[in-house]
Amino acid sequence: MRLYTSAPSPFGRKVKITAHLAGVFDQIQCILINANDPESAARNPNPLAKIPTLALDTGEILLDSQVICLHLLREQGLLERCLPSAHTSTLLTRAAVADGLMEAALLMVYERRFRPAELVSAEWLQRQNSKMLGALEWLDQHRQPVLSTPTLDQIGLACALGYLDFRFQGEWRTRFKTLAQWLAEFQQMVPAYRLTDPERS
Ligand SMILES: N[C@@H](CCC(=O)N[C@@H](CS)C(=O)NCC(=O)O)C(=O)O
Image 1 (spheres, rainbow, N blue to C red):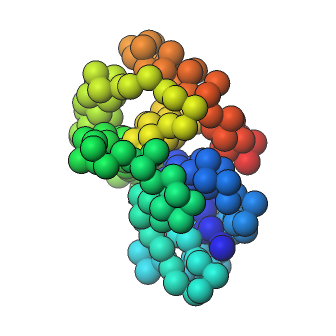
Image 2: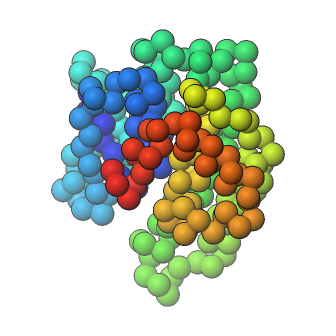
């Protein structure tokens, strides 16, 4: 299998952690995509030009991160552990909020990266920042203790918080202390979190 991704991508990190948990990380060749370099971006078979994308050995392409994670878990018989059928809708909703947090954070990064400084919209940044704060508050209220095999939404939450650490110097930690404690527990229970740290992978 080939995984098109990048070291900083929080969505890519979700897939990498899931692949570690599913015991298939060694079967995956990671192809690093730099979205700012057109030649590199052209190697990504994703029609939306987004990462992560998983190319299966059959030639089939899977996207987006949730679909890829669900595929890996199902193939390795871990789906019921990471997404118990009794709570599917609840957990997928939490996973969607964690994804939304990543998305709002990414949009803030892109606004500053892709626009000339004089065109950067303070209003747009504020709008995304409100979404981030709303998501953090909600996720804090709905957080669950981490077990040795985390659930899909917990993987997403850890990756979202890791992205805030990476891109926003962990400012969220001052206001959301219980979430910071939660992430420390996740880090202890799930070694794949450190292995996929954007600073080292
Ligand atoms: N919903 C998608 C989101 C993926 C996504 O937005 N990835 C970012 C990088 S972390 C990306 O490829 N951005 C480039 C772009 O939007 O053009 C998923 O879960 O895979």
